[in-house]
Image (cartoon, rainbow, N blue to C red; front, top):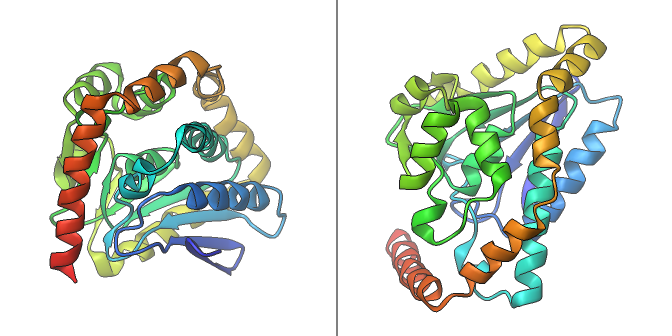
Amino acid sequence: MSTFQTTIQDRLVVITLDRGRSNPINHQMIIELTDCIHKLENDDNVGGVILTGKEGFFSSGIDLIEAYDYDEEQSRAFWVDFLALQNALAAFRKPIVAAISGHSPAGGCVLAICCDYRVMAAGSFIIGLNEIPVGIIVPDSVFNLYSFWLGQRKAYQYLLEGKLLKVDEALEAGLIDEIAEPDSLMKAAVAKVTAYMKLNPVTWSESKLNLRKELIGKLKADQAETLNKMLEQWWAPATRQGLQMMIRNLKAKSTTAN
């Protein structure tokens, strides 16, 4: 896969996002990740999965630079497929742990909260959903997924203000489950997913799906109306102008980093 790497040892697959410095999510990554998740779910040689990024970044979220240039048809396909990836991850029958290796805003946070457990690297990193300040209408499914972990009150407030949390704040809020030093991150993630894998796989997976039954049902609900509103706002002049400013800042940061 060109947007991530996979390794397998002792029935444990590690998916390492590998796209640029910050692993921004483009349509290709979405399609490849969704295909990978479906294959792993149906592979009897796989007992569990760790999803991680690279040092400093789990994923910076949607690749705004690329997504800005999508035409209307491409934009619709992108969001439809992104929501499908979210559903595939959330309904994954096997244990999946997020080893959050750095910054994880917006789409990066969505990937992480689909998992069963989140270990985040200690450091000056942020995680959360800041779609509204970016100009993206939050779909019902994202609110339902966020509130599954945070509770509806916090999820509601955090989404409306586009709150991004520091690592210790994320732990206190329940957005992540554990903090590990960067050089111990994978060790902590392996310990957790291995503990899950030692339990009876049928009992574990059926219980997981039972506990997530209501959530999975909400994620699979028809979101066509919300999607239409999202896309209408995505193409609104004010949103496009705001995106242009963000993209200029992103390109400037990229130039400085290089």
